[in-house]
Image 1 (tube, rainbow over the protein chains, first blue to last red):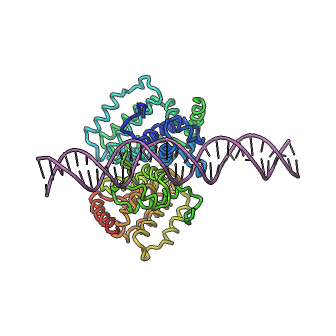
Image 2: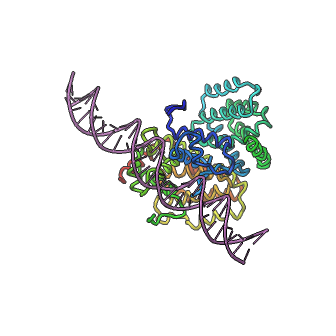
Image 3: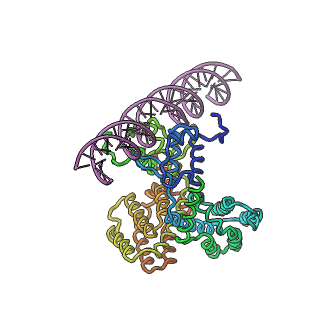
Length: 225
Length: 225
DNA sequence: CTGATCTTAACTGTATACAGTACAGTATTC
DNA sequence: GAATACTGTACTGTATACAGTTAAGATCAG
């Protein structure tokens, strides 16, 4: 027990968080098997807590598991990304609708303040930083809809498409912030239908767009190694 | 390796399935700690694979985990059930909309056939059987929307509210089948808005209804023991 | 009888050992 | 030369041991 690891956290929790980040950013290559002995050594733990963490990540679809062969990194499949985008769109539309219903004026104002603070410009931010800001905006919105179950699933969906978005954000970095402002304006007016419509435009992505962006994603995954 | 357990399944997978069923039906009492040694002995396994299965179930919110204290059965909280019902409603509305868009006429006909086969009457079925049939109907519908990610989450939501529904179904056993028919009719007409509206009526449940039905649920949980 | 403190038993957290299995690499045969 | 059988190595699957921690029970003061 020497590292300055985040305390108050069990070893399994710690491993879970670290490996989840590795899975998100494809430090494991798509479809490749994970060597437990080697990974355990690298993270300074034994195989027992490591496998417990890996099992959690299997349940959250970051990894897959095959009887007798072990744990594997998920693949980056166009169809799956498309379904996750579609799912995200559904979650966000519901989020907007419920927010129109439940959020107080003060809470909506907080959202406006957040957009003001993060500025209308991208401020020289990296693609990853822009994605992070975008996710925070949507998390705040989801929090106002007062449904923690949907919030939890949205977090999972966002994490699973995050790598893809890092790549994709480069192409449309300018648009995001302005679209957020329009959505909040519609919420302030309590115009749920309009807000949902704007949200759909903001999120939806066609399968062919995804397919071509995934090619770029793959090339970056293997460039980095 | 003696039991006639479902083969081709790893021990962890087997434990996972068995314990999940136990969690769904509250064989573990709400909030109570799970004794690993005792449960391992009861299921004829050692603690290592048992804990791997328990960790998966924590990730799926059937159990909770506290550092240094172990695994606990989830509680049955009105607010959480309400949010799950709301979530289910969102998922099913999306399912209906996408089905209107993507399903072939033949697929919709299969749905009609399924309703015909399971009859307009409850046929003396138990509450649990009716809930199971209802879940199958909604799974089939979700399959037609061609989004496996949403299907997977719907399964999880359904499993988590299942015990509650076993209790609740007694009160409204007659209604379900007829509502399903109306929904399918709207889908056949490709009238998405109407189908969604019917689905909302079919699923939504107010928080106060849930709260009172949960009292009944708790009494049955502790009766059974 | 109530509350605090100490002691002890029970249980969790993790490492490790070993058995069994998958897979690669080599040899052998056609 | 290609295909198949064999053998060895590496890795997973699971049990178990032990250390550390929590929680309960007993003892004693107020």
